[in-house]
Figure 1 (cartoon, chains in turn orange, brown, purple, blue):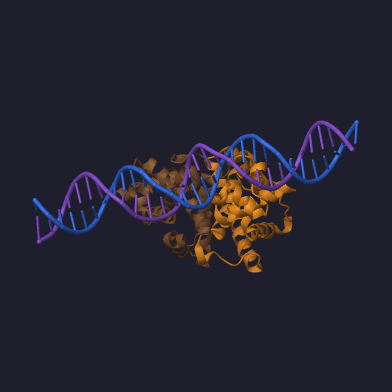
Figure 2: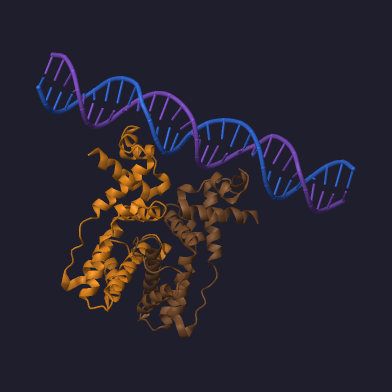
Length: 178
Length: 178
DNA sequence: TAGAGTCCTCTACATCTGTAGAGGAGGCTG
DNA sequence: CAGCCTCCTCTACAGATGTAGAGGACTCTA
């Protein structure tokens, strides 16, 4: 579908050149479509932004399924997956920052992982699971952010490798302890 | 100094409107200077970006001094301070994202907290302090990011309050445990 | 096959943006 | 005082950008 072609190109652009790289014509070029296509589907820039954010949300909608006998491992593999999907994750961060001065975007980006984390904390017997879940989510977010954009060269093992998963699992285990 | 006036206006702009809001003329207006001023001090946009990032780095250069008898409390207060300085912290995140497709910026943003964290982990008797320090830094970063831009309404207590510091301290204590 | 409706491409235009340089005001040096 | 230098303001301009609408190609229905 043409619409998805456009939003996907927008995501790639935002990841590679930041929000500033997101222009109607740049999307046209990137998607290999004739000039004006993006403008026809998303007349205003705001619509274009909302479009690509909705696409992001749509792609990440699927619930994270975890094996109870290897919780930390499963979570670690999920995080590693996000690192591998570098572009999508970078675009998501750009969108979150954008949502700061563009609140409508928050409605689109429902943050389901958050509730899952609370439930998890409850199951693990944390007192105050709400708070523990929030902290856990923050930790995950931080790990991801740090490995993706922070730290420079010392950002840890290459994503997608067993070593990366092992390192992440080690961190997750620590964070899961009650 | 005029130069600082300009970079400070740039920081505010980036925080409030994102990287896209950073244009020479917008900085002029924001700083209350005549048109062309920003362009005179930072001829290219790249120079302007490097200028404001350098200013950010300069302002955060001071080492974080910690009271050994209340480590977690001190760190919590530091984080809370970053939350209060919302604009500066938001601008820093924008800059980090920017550094992703603009590597020269990484040179400017030397990340001294990182080494401090490693030293701290070592002092606290973690085996593998390097890794523990990295994880700790990631956790802090995540807490900060989550409370600043993530989570929407459930982003926790208002920054600057005692409750905020208490909540952060609780999280930091957990993260500091070997 | 005619007509209606949809989807797409192209072109237009006001505005904004990056970048450059001319030239003036004011201070410092001799 | 004359000359020079630095700092600043103003104006210019090519190119990019957001947004709009005209009109063509194509598809579906009767």
